[in-house]
Length: 599
Image 1 (spheres, rainbow, N blue to C red):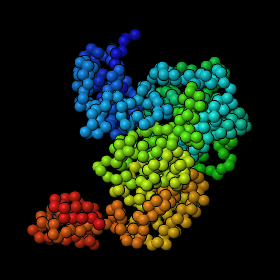
Image 2 (tube, rainbow, N blue to C red; image 1 turned 45 degrees about the vertical axis):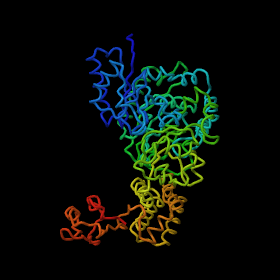
Image 3 (cartoon, rainbow, N blue to C red; image 1 turned 180 degrees about the vertical axis):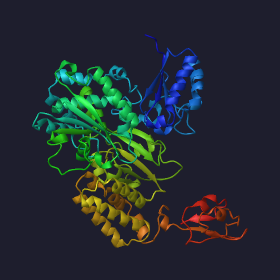
Image 4 (cartoon, rainbow, N blue to C red; image 1 turned 135 degrees about the vertical axis):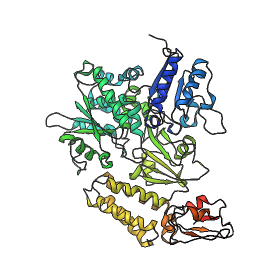
């Protein structure tokens, strides 16, 4: 066996792959071979490191040098200087801020030091397409322990004792869900263990990154769940728009079968379990468990009335347990480390960690895994690096279209199930969109509602018609056509939809509207009473004007106006015809004298 003195870890998650990380790997291999070092230096393609804003990322061990924004052209210098001569390439080292010194390891960064990685523990540390690397760090030990030393009820008792709650949004106790399915009676003995990897929230990519960086952790956990509830078949329902995740799942399933870790008589225990993949077409409603199961069965993805619940009558009318990717990714850690260790992290009612996809108006976009109960301020200011360009933090949207907005006044809110529920928000699957002073909260609510309308399956009237009427009322607000009475009607309609919609999609659709009305009512009133958008976003309420004292008559604004709405003679003050103006802002961006303002 050849001695390997250095490992070059290159992120090949979706973000870095789109920025040519596969080509970077190829160049590394070419340069190492040219230097005759291809036997002693190993290039490893990994999953996501989490620091997506800085990709492509290259991490070199044993030094732990963290290189960010690496390009194909940088590879030759890294090999010749770092690998051959042992000199760190300072210009490529990650810097937290422009005026700070470069950091040389992950643990030195503000982004990572506040995190506790359980779900993401292997992402960026192993080659997700090599089962030997997963086994080398303890993979499939939990499955072996469960199958050879534990009874199904003992497994369920451990998960119940851990306090693990579902990470897909509802936060239902995982152990309790397993118990219900275990206790249910199937007419032919067949039960199913399924994984929800649909992940349809805008801005959410937690599950995708786990599947891309650590697929075996999900397969192992599903096999454990299958053993606990008495299932012999599992299905992973994954978005077809996740080609890298799908490919790595296919490879992982094939490898696990070859090693006897899936299939017949696993570990000689007499327990058999297989996993199949089912690709979703991107319907948001298929994130709802009954709609997902309908889709797996080959039908249109529509929810159905409950009860009976899937634990009693689910996939193919058989008892079924369904957990999302992140929930499963916690299972093997709990089995290996014990439920007490898991409960020692997070809060009493929300133990463990939560992964958030941090995006929007934030410096460090990426994946963040923090102990439950960590204040939002820590995520925004410390891990996220704050709002860029000197702008002020205004709000954070959690839970996607099903969640709510947390205003700046509540930035110290603990991020856990119960604390967010008290302020009208929710964790959801883990999307966390940051907004600054330039965001209009009415427009944000309108955006999420428009998404819901497009994704509604249309089965129930409350969601199909109610959300569309709600959108029309919000549209009136953004156009300055609404009245104060309309705000009352909006709230009443929100309550009706929540109370009468068939599934979770419709029941939570009004959340962004209600939370913005609660925390940003002044913005709604400004739109309705003053006919003004405080953030300057809603075009129908904008007005561009030219200050005659500042205008030099250079004609640049008039020459660039696509609506020919600006008139005036050379060296004389110009005027904007408000009836012709299309509110595009081209005149303001082209004016060199600051003569044009937006109100």
